[in-house]
Length: 207
Image (tube, rainbow, N blue to C red; front, side, top):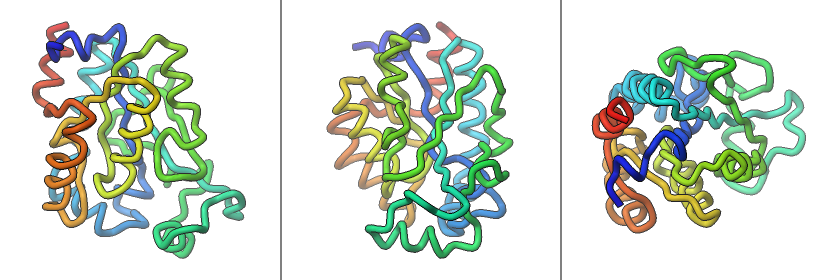
């Protein structure tokens, strides 16, 4: 299928995963991730992609991770979750940590913030796939952090739910950075369409 057709605004959503202040911002609980994001210039690039999406009428979904102040109901079954529970910055509901970063240009009433409270995927208990289906979405562009865990998990869940998935290769990062190239080439390329931010931006602005 032609990319322009695949990401047509009428049936496409942009899902930006965990690009929130407490994960990728200056007060991040994950310093290595925030550093990789800053060095890659990821947030400004995704801000441009989100702006193009809005112009074209593509819904922008900010898939954020939240926790209760008492951490009730959160996962405890991996080293990643254990580290998150001990972090100085917690992703507590209603705090600036869970807000999309300013670079993304979040527009209340236009964009959608869809939190999850558990799991490794943006679709873990968030209702993401069901809500996308309800809106007639058939293609999801997935970007954000990280290629280590959340991006592959989200891509797999959306593919399993029947969506076409597009991943911009410069729309996410991994730690170490070189590992991200391996994930893209040897895992995600088998289940998703790989593109880049510039190509997707042009496709939407020409729609």
